[in-house]
Length: 52
Image (cartoon, rainbow, N blue to C red; front, side):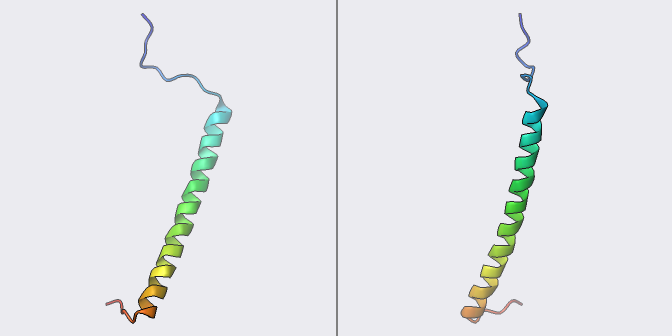
């Protein structure tokens, strides 16, 4: 009976592509965090809300 718990083999290029896309996604998330913080600051400023 074959072992069904083993992962299928995949090319090294697949792993490299996954790593590249993961790194790119991490950069996008970091950029979004900066944008959200900037928007938060702008909205607080527009409505006169102060950080304490």
